[in-house]
Image (cartoon, rainbow, N blue to C red; front, top):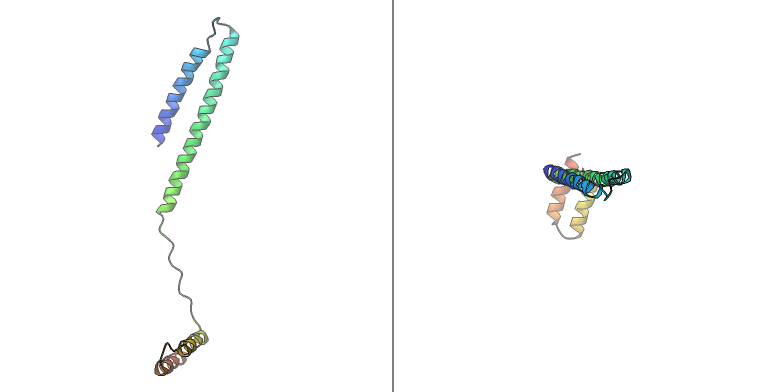
Length: 116
């Protein structure tokens, strides 16, 4: 990408020089003609320089964006620790909803209480 920008810069400067030579020489070679040609060349060179600078910045921004996309995703968050009270409440909700049998309820409740 940088080589392409350098090539565009050299091609643009060549065209500025050609434009200066073509437009800088009026029918009568007067100082005013040379002055106007110099002004034109300066304006064109400044515009080309700004354009090339903007293209370089855009290329850098694209490279940074590509690097950001290449980063791996962050690790998943760690599971939150549940207090024994939260575990008992969850167990009660499972039993009330009929998702576990009374024997499973008693066994899990005992395990929670034994872990204290």
